[in-house]
Amino acid sequence: MTVYHQGSRALQDRVGVRALADHVGRAVGTGIKPVAAAFLEHQPLLIVGTADPAAGEVWATPLTGTPGFVRATGPHRMSVAGGPAPADPLATALTTPGTLVGTIALDPRTRRRMRLNGRLDPTERGFAVEADQVFSNCPKYLQRRRTYETVPGRVPGTPRRSAELTDSQADFIRAADTFFLATVHPHGADTSHRGGDPGFVRVVSPRELTWRDYPGNAMFLSLGNLLADPRAGLLLLDWTTGTTLQLTGEARTEFGADGERRVRFTLTRAVETGSALPLRWSPPE
Image (cartoon, rainbow, N blue to C red):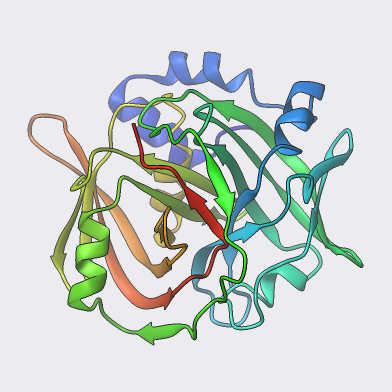
């Protein structure tokens, strides 16, 4: 499977980074190396993104468990124990054989992250992903949080669904220093991290967000996907209370006269779940 499709190539050429992208792309493989396998087994959090097969909407959802709930069970296979709650927008997708998924395991303690994209295979304990792409990213724009704890007795609240953002949700987004972005293209899915100082995501209206696309690894996987298919899913989480805010809609990249890139996201649906995650992380440095 090739690393880049036409959408990513178009953006690489527009920005003039094709040669750099080719160099970076050589680090993308289909195998899970021992160091990557060891990294996975230490993580209490995995973010998964894909499209809901019924509605066609793209979402990102968090999965948590005792470290070891995500692990390599073969040279090209990652297994996950458990899955999303029945009310989660991706509950059906993550039990459907062959679903194209993008995953990211991110460790705020070390500022390391690993992405694995492939095809889903349901199992008795949860699901596995047969890898098409496996690669790591640099720690740029990732906030360090040194410790976490599992909060006993924390019970997820009833999901609150809406077609636009409430005032409190808008404030939640303005205070965020991290979100996860799920995108798709005809032959795969991808989930990536976006980070910055609080306020790096702007709330334009109850149905519209924008954020600056900071210079990264020149691959343009997410923005390339959006050029091919504008459907997108965003996940924001409260690192202290475990509240999650899942958004789905469409996103497009805008180029300013000075060359600055901004992504504009138009909301279709929002799902907020209080105390959704049992993890409580220390404040960012």
